[in-house]
Image (cartoon, rainbow, N blue to C red; front, side, top):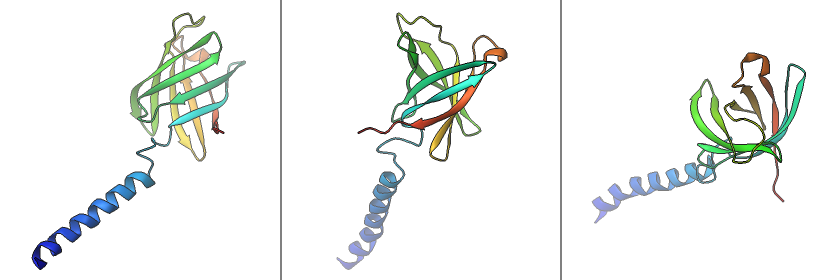
Length: 134
């Protein structure tokens, strides 16, 4: 009986530590980009208010520039600390999709570097802040 308890105790400790680590690092609630982010992206004399929502698995979400310019995000790739999300325009949206939002967590904020589907002259970027739910 003592031999089994000596073997089971380390397994029990590993199980408890793993469960604690998963909760502490937010895996049950999503990663560092998970949530709603709000701010302005600017470039080449253009300034846009944007709201981005990233789902808990950080594989997609949504974006909105206005009530008529919005859609879905789909994770395309991850590199150099950035998650690259492809914008898809929602049905009835008055603007085109195809831009790529490259999101990276910087402190309490998210940096958004947008690569336009129209080429470099339309690229914009900015820092977004988390929208707190009440």
